Length: 121
Length: 113
Image (cartoon, rainbow over all chains, first blue to last red; front, side):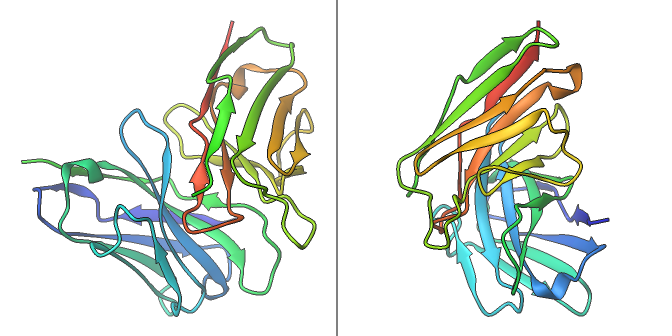
C-alpha cells in the first residue's frame, strides 16, 4: 500500500524558512516522479512543484519559483520542499503526491495526508 | 496556462439519484498517444484528495463502478450513477497534459439532500 507522510510544517514568520519532508513507502520511490500541491484554507488545490525520478529535472509554479526548492533522497525514500522567503499567501496545507513510474504509463496521483504551514507574525 | 472550468460548483443530490459534473478545458487534452490527460479527484471533508478517474475514463483501483468518466479533447464529464452518503465532498478535475503548471478546476461541492 502506498503511504506518503508529510512532516515539518508549523508556524513561521513572514520572510522565514521551513523545510517539509515526505516519507514514502509501499512503492519503488526512486522510480517515481513526485509533486507538492497546496491548498489554502477554504480554497482549491494548487500545484507547486514536481521532481523527476532521479532529481535531475525540477519544475515550479510561477508563484514559488526562486523561493522554493524541491529535492529528494532516494536512499531514504524521502521528498523535500525547502521554502524560503515565506509570505502570508503561502499559508496552506501542503500535500506530497506520487506520480507515474519513470518508464510506466500515467495512472494519476496518489496523495499524502498533508501538513499545515502557517505564515504569520 | 490551461484553464479548467467546472460546473456546477455546487450540487445537492438525493441518495440513489444520479449526479454529473462537467469540466471544460481551455486547450485540447488529447495527446499524441491517444489518451485524454484529465483526472478526477474527490476530497472528502477533512481528508486529502483521492483519485477517482485517470486518463479521462479509467477508474482507479477500488473505486466503485457507479463512478464513470467520459469526454475527449476539451469537454469531460464525471457521472455518479447512484449517489451515496459517502460521496459527499469536493470534486476536482486536473490536467497533467501540458505542464508546467499542472492545473485544477475550481472544485464542485456535492452535498446530500
